[in-house]
Length: 250
Ligand code: ADP
Ligand code: MG
Ligand code: MG
Image 1: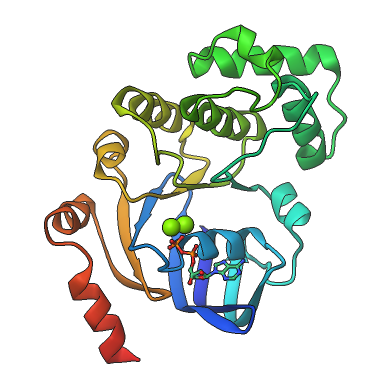
Image 2 (image 1 turned 135 degrees about the vertical axis):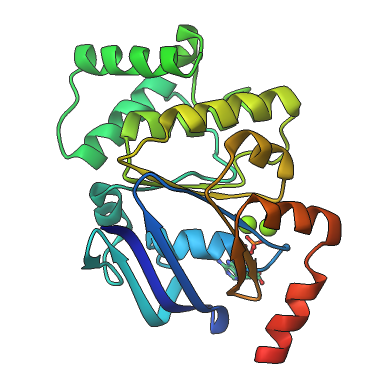
């Protein structure tokens, strides 16, 4: 059964058309990568899937778990199992990583998380991801390096256990080792019961992730879908070809 089915999805932000008819199907157990030039609409697609209120759907449909979720608010989508990582998480003064994650888990699962049980869950996930236990007591994003912020995104995903995780440029600005750590984390969390959509500019992480599908998004459309060889092709030749195609069609 399809987990996510996006049909002819069009969106607007501040009266500007951004998504121009996206079609995308994602099944459980699959890892999809979306690539594309700056301003193509990749983050917009992620935000529209999550239900960000700045973006208005003007046409088409988002079906999740067999249900049309076009009108569903962000928190309801999160409860249904959609997760979106944030590109630039902010510092939240006085809140520890553990507090933050426990609050998020309570909100998304709809079940109050006891301090004791949650500690246990968090420990288990940090072990899985090779994150030092002291990380839980750090203040959220205070003095975090780029790599530590990204780790927090992966840890968030691990704790919330979404059915569909969307990671928007989780690898940007990371060095080789940090990229590897993030990719390893993603691989460990991927299972036959969930699916992931990873948005990235970088081929390096793709070598580790070995995605099932690669999509090229240009001018608010998916210009081409393929496998890893498509990512290699783009590494060599860039997006010019797809930009022209998108222009000719409009
Ligand atoms: P990408 O992630 O592929 O680089 P974005 O989805 O961030 O592209 O942006 C696509 C286009 O939509 C850009 O022209 C951008 O300026 C515009 N856009 C995205 N979000 C907003 C917003 N909240 N307000 C105004 N314009 C936006
Ligand atoms: Mg961008
Ligand atoms: Mg973006």
